[in-house]
Amino acid sequence: MTADDLKKLAAARALELVRPGMRLGLGTGSTAKHFVDLLGQRVAAGLDVICVATSEATQAQALALGIRMSTLDETPELDLTVDGADEIDPQLRLIKGGGAAHLREKIVAAASVRMIVIADDSKLVEKLGRFPLPIEVVPFGLAATRRAVAAAIAGSGSAGELVLRKRPDGATVVTDNGNYILDAHLGAIEQPEALAFALGQVPGVVEHGLFIGLASGAILAGADGLRLLGATG
Ligand SMILES: O=C(CO)[C@H](O)[C@H](O)COP(=O)(O)O
Image 1 (cartoon, helix red, strand yellow):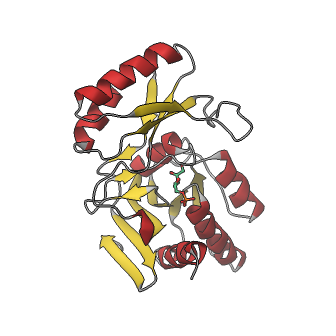
Image 2: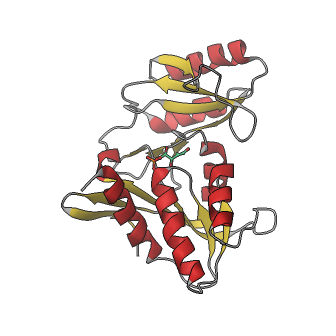
């Protein structure tokens, strides 16, 4: 099985959690895309749900599939969000934002009674940090914010290079919210909670990709089948 087959397997298992009338948060990325595709098939067959997207890309995909879309202003509480992740540790702490969508993803997850993570099992790590930690920052004052972010990282016991995220054509990546992404190459994050707190104190940081205490469960697909972490019933 390819990694993409595994992502689809995890997405299909998450679809079993969906009930008629649910208010759903729809994640972003290649794994979440499978979930939205499968949900679209169920909607075409008559399932009635209302959804909030975590990115413009997911919004466009869902609308094209005929899924009824709402906003957090109209629907401020969601029953279930299904989203991918870049890394998942055994305590269900996550790194997200590889697709630059972690600000909306975090807002949507926080508005949800449950957040279920779907991924292939290569995303499961003992310690977060091998994947660069995305930090969304406002363009104004970038150099000053960057220095403050570096100081916050050092002060919370981590170290590593900060790289302004670029597109393949060399242009700076701009998020759906008009901001930039600094990717922190940290290697291993020994104290995720301390780092999350420190980054949250930096003016100019809009949101970082550490998701702590947000995921209720994870569905991980591997060559040996599905592995469930936390509450996935
Ligand atoms: O956080 C995300 C986007 O901001 C994605 O969920 C994360 O990057 C995983 O993506 P994929 O399912 O394509 O591996």
